[in-house]
Image 1: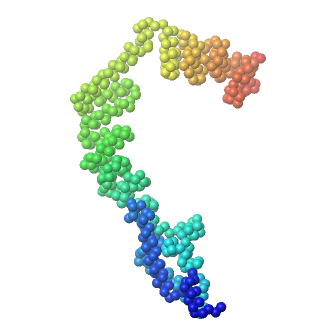
Image 2: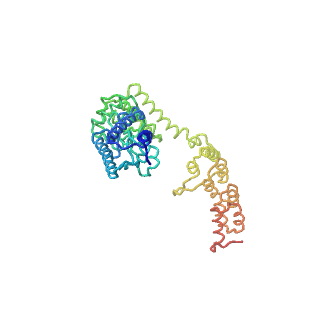
Image 3: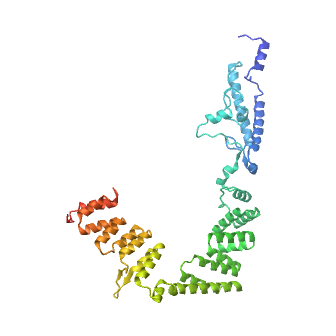
Length: 447
């Protein structure tokens, strides 16, 4: 198709295709500069705290803007240009076909300029949608904070700032004493108690007591935080060692005295308080400690003698039945089952133990049930009822299934056992136990 000169000029000026020129190298360099400006503009999208942490990389992993990167990018562009020239020369005429694709389908400029030629470079949206699952687009301007935790290259100031923000940050890289102390001083300068405590926990774990105490002695802010932390976690041993090192005798004595709060046994608590009397308290505190010991000693005497139930029974000559009824009801309300067991346990002159109830065990069972005693406790005392009919009635009334089944087995009463089978839950262990007894050939049933 023949065109006039004017038509050809109009076509080249209006076509979206770009004609080949030997100035392509200059165009590529201009694109390189434009892409570099676009990369630098990424700082606006990154948090101010991480401005210093931006690292721009190319597909090869080299920093964008470096000399080696510029040379490789220029060389790659030149190579593509020369390859296009050779193809055009071999055809001896200009064509409107595409220029050969570069080795890589992505470039820095393509992500910001879009498509420069049909089929040449992909846009950002096309690149992300066409990328396979295992391929990753260049992470331009990626904050180092996203991966530097794994390389442990945070400075002391950066580490303290991350701790203040609540971010995970490993402190293991600070191995020398100087680094650890600088980290502590940085934390103190932030006036953040959480950061100071976090660093102190690290120092407590990685330093010996002597070195830790020595360094904290000249750092009073950190020392106060450590003392408070040890009190909160209840590490009395380390706290006492710290007060002893600092020669704080009165605080040492008070910390030792507080340990009595953890002692439940009255006799052991009294003995512990006795050891506190000689500690270096102030004059006023010494009087309080002595009074505490004296009062506890008197209280133990009262509870063991004057106010004990046995002492009151002997003093006022209370009958056994009245005493047992009163004591049983009181201990059952407190659910003190061991005390109730001791209440009915007696010894003969040979040393054998036996349970005896002046009020009868049937009354004991009723009182225990009234106070919501567990089935296991009820079964124990129902079994102590001597009369068989009374035992069966109580066991049936209070659903002590094992007592009923065992009693029917001992009586060899098959009919009563069959009748009771309908009163237990279907599929229960009691029903299975009844079926096993009924099918047993070793029991000679009376009926």
